[in-house]
Length: 242
Image 1 (cartoon, one colour):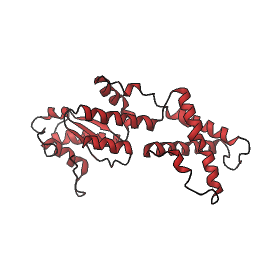
Image 2: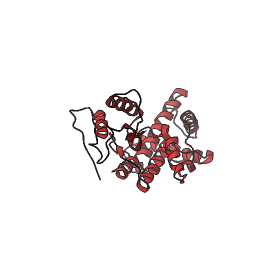
Image 3: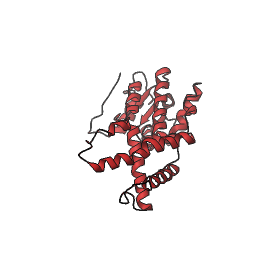
Image 4: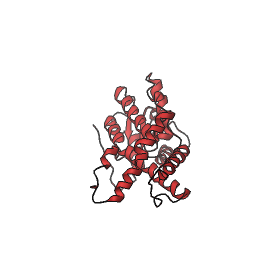
């Protein structure tokens, strides 16, 4: 396992890229004299923005306007790169990523959650103070979508919420738990019915598939830079890279 750090006094991404090009990052890999070797490397970065900056830094370090660059992948925005991941997996004959159910589009997701929230608000005995109208419904749907993303990303089961607050201490929390039945029951049932999965779930599955690919058939230098591994799937991926 190789884990390296960069002093806070120097620019992080430029330091990593310069070290990769000069052969200081990966033993036996030097691309300053032969930039075409960069095509052998893979660089994982946290975001799409970091990817764009990295491309500019590579060109600046090589003193050129065009060059063959490493494969650069944004772990934090894996949904936007899923075809890249799927293509790699398919090329190896696995097809695992291609067999995953497609993710649900964000607009359909938000509108469907709003519809489920509205239906929940109209149930017998519901308090009219919880959902006040269309704007409130959409806002609650957005909050619920963010919570679902957080639960999936952190790998937390919904059952973990049940015992957070004793029943006798907070009646409002019980209303909250009732509201969360949308995410715990109605939403999974809807996804199963239409054959879709959560974007965050698909992202984690793709990250896991990529980690398995690297473990089984590593090809060329592989560097993961700038990720804290705060998500369980990303932490496992970083372990596979290291």
